Image (cartoon, rainbow, N blue to C red; front, side):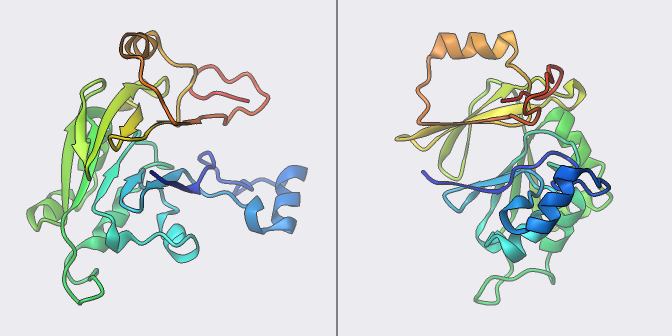
Length: 221
């Protein structure tokens, strides 16, 4: 199992869009790997995690091949993790594979609070009707499968109204925990982990707060 990070920044990106502080200015001058785009990752080239507004940048400069990706799991509905308008670019007449054929349906997996955000996208019903996208509503602690992976969402400590989750992802041999965005895990998540005792080969944790105490919705170093 391979994970590739395309973006690891918070909502403002780095350097910050409007920020002229010393740290952001140094990053602008240095360029390259000092630039951080909004959160997105890819498992084995086929299972996408989140669909931020920087997805197009990841296609252009990060090597993300969206024509080869048919499934995306969403952590929550904040705009730096979900930019639904760009889903329109996959519809018929806009996107083809290397053989000139239309792409298969793009599967989105999200909890109710986040699925409602997707449904509010003005072209949602049309894209469903023409089989461009399919929305699958998931629930915390209920396992589901996508692209051959067994996936269990855990409740995240973030914006509660969006039903935010983090993900336990297994291919049957290796297992990873993708835990962005969340503060220190809620009791119900710890209880699930204690009861089931999963072994994770790789853990990806939120450290947005860095050295700042940020208990409400993120963690730090």
